[in-house]
Amino acid sequence: MPQTLAQKLIAKAAGRASVEPDEIVTCRVDLAMMHDLQGPRRVGPMLDKLGAPIWDTDRLVVVSDHFAPAIDTDAAGILDFTRKWAKANGIRHFYDMQGISHVLLPERGHLRPGTFLVGGDSHTPTGGAVGAFAIGVGSTEICGVIVTGEIWVRVPRSIRVNWKGKIGHGVAGKDMILKQCAMLSMEACDYRVIEYRGDAIAALPMGERLTLCNMSPELGAKTSVIPPDPVTVDYLAERGVKVDDAPRWQSDADAGYEQTLDLDAGALEPQISAPGSPSHSAGAGSYQKVAIDQAYIGACTGAKLSDLHMAAEVVRGRRVAPGVRFLIAPASQQTTASAAADGTLAALTAAGAILLPTGCGACAGMGAGTLAAGEVCIASSARNYKGRMGDNTSQVYLGSAYSVAAAAVAGKIVDPRELLQ
Amino acid sequence: MITGRAWVFGDNINTDLIAPARLLRRPVAEFSRFCMEPVMPTFAAEVKPGDIVVGGLNFGCGSSREQAPEAIQYLGVAAVIAKSFARTFYRNSMNIGLPAIVCNEAGSIRQGARLRISLEKGVVENLDCGKSYPCQSVPPHLIAMLNDGGLLRHLEKRLRAGALRAKQQ
Ligand code: SF4
Image (cartoon, rainbow over the protein chains, first blue to last red):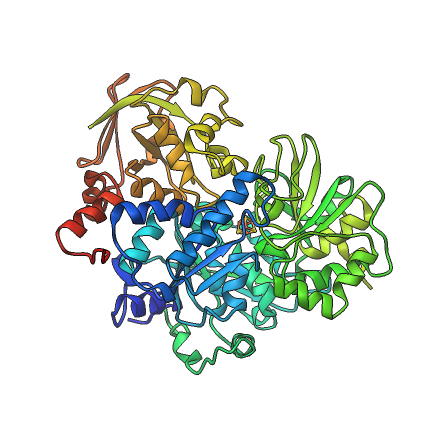
């Protein structure tokens, strides 16, 4: 039977030649990831109680990103526990305040096409951008994974999304995914794998591919995959990962998709999601009157180097609007370093942006940049549920880094293309 | 067999509503007091042990935080029924031993209804009106795990049976 890429990835992990949708199979895990919020502090006591060892400490990545750096003694205690736990358990791949887990995994060369990744966080599907099968789970499940090295999965069906045409200037991967959030119902994507294809995807740099796959849970999908191509191979080569089996990780020509969706990248406008859900998105033009208190470029979704470049392009030669806080929390230390080296940070701070430490920060209302009652924020993150970034009455709009930076200088939501030549 | 009163919620109940991120650094006894607060402020204080949470579509969407089903379980809820679940919530709930049951007709259940659930038979009975609603069957390996009391107890059992490696002392 012809197989989709998702089926091939699962079949490999299950030690099978092929698998069929809805089958329940047990997969060998290539890599597990857990972070300070859901990892050691919860999984450590479970492991102790169980009295079982970690199946392979070299296949476990531990990241402190959610509480880093500590803003109170509770957070400091959690970070301290995580550090000590990583040391006591001989975890070689421990990243303490080095960035957000989903960005670190590809950036530090932990992923490649074919990797079966289980992460203790819902945005783990980010890794699908390099052709990995990446799924997010909770703490107890991660405990099971790091004890057994295995996980059960029901083989999902795949939906093929073809982005055709050429994306316009000022429009980004984030706009593509927000558009999909508005178009596709959660039921349509429930438990499906989204496979991205088309010339607009082929032209999309890795930073934006990561954004596209990052928001799989906002679609209700199990994960997303982008079949490896020259962009993937080059991106990984720069990180010391040699890929010579890209042809193996392609869907068969006549593989079965539940649905194929053709979308026109050329017609895509910048998208903004209104507060409450990422699915409340519409063209940026429909929000012209919304004034903002804070513009936030942060999170695994929208603070990679490519995002900072977009923001800098918008604000160069301009100033942040009076009364607006423009906060930037780069997604990793490498991002901060690269943006410092190429002048991006200077352009942003010259415009009045405030630089924050790398980490999850305000994205989940847990760090610097949390919102007060009634405040309005536009953010490059993935979620805008009620209370997500602070008080229950605060309002969060989602957009690309272009849109967030444009709002920062305009003081209200605008179409970022108005500020770009 | 699970019997209890229904607490009915709508579609797309996300994990930020069930267990707000800003409280996750605190123990479950604290964050569970804010469970569902933005949508039903009385829920955490008034739910009784054995009660049943009834959701609509895509229950538990959002983050993969296990604290969401944990908060619900800590308040004494015996099971969650929904038209559909976000996949991370479903797995988390089952893993901690809180049955998550997919029932297309969950929408016909009214607040306060007395329900009886049989996992093995795959049916929810509404004791108030005598109707019964079929549920999606739970795969046998998950029934076995629920019967053991969740994934950890299930692993403990495997360890004792020698099917898993124990830690060298
Ligand atoms: S940045 Fe936000 S969405 Fe990403 S892992 Fe951190 S809390 Fe989650």
